Length: 73
Image (cartoon, rainbow, N blue to C red; front, side, top):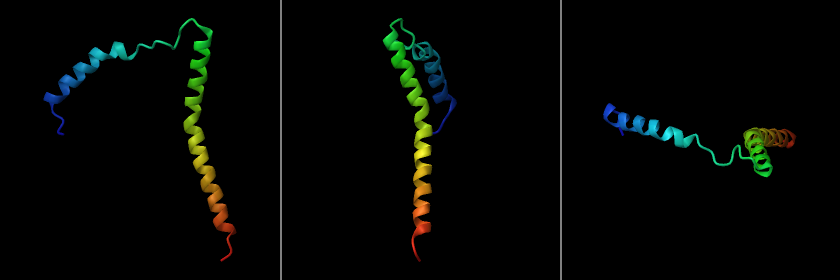
């Protein structure tokens, strides 16, 4: 699809009208302590997840490389 001004203007206008709805969050800062705790734990887990994934892949590559180095030729 070719991006033209004819296609771009309605898309930008739609973003402007949807912006206030997109920033609304029903559970982030509610008064209930259980909900806040769940929000913080989930935010922490989702923050750590990419680091765990990359670290796991690097560890797997390291172990695989060691296994290839130890095999007799």
